[in-house]
Image (cartoon, rainbow, N blue to C red; front, side):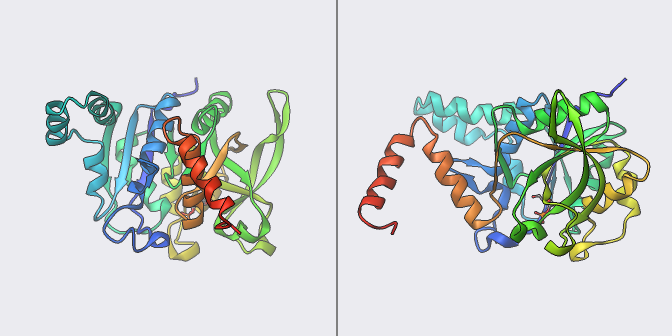
Length: 299
Ligand code: G1P
């Protein structure tokens, strides 16, 4: 019997150094893409994938995240008094959306370390991990795609994407053996090896891990067993490599467009494309961009 995935862990204790100074006093997970904080995109993806239990690993200065998913009595009263029903419903929906638990990571010692902090809350069951600065726009939510693979094999599954040579060293990279899956080949891989942030010359492939994982609970022992790796941090990729000694791991090239919203340029791309796709803003924003173009501001 394959155990159901009910919980999703959101590591959110990082220092957000790629986005300073915006992240000096504000968590990067709260940076808004158009009008919604990054972490809410990830949480909605989990919910739309059928996962309701959210565990957020926070750190110092991250109370804005807890407040965001909490009830806001003052704001709700204010909106009620001003008869702003639509806004009131939107604000309420955020706190009603999830059953959320928080755990602190006292020091930012790496992604693996952050996931290990959730061990007690997860227990002995499979779970999802979501890095909210990877924002994925997909018809079928990326986590749902991974869950479908998990439900078939009962093993850990990583989201994969092909990336160009010049950026490969920013990722965990896999060596995988293609496995045919539901009639298509080249999408599913059985992982043979993983390397965190390799130099382009040492990378085993161009298939990078993107921040969505389905993990079986043995990962916790593997995280506890590994030494600090790239950047002196406890790396989840190293723990996966350790897990590979006695468990199979799969990688899946998901369908969808991923934005690295933790990076300034990636964040701008996502902002422009999400704004263009919005029913309430898209046409005006498109006209504005066209205006810039015809005024020669984009030359
Ligand atoms: C983390 C992981 C890395 C993965 C990446 C995806 O790195 O350690 O394996 O490829 O997320 O975004 P980070 O971006 O936190 O340096």
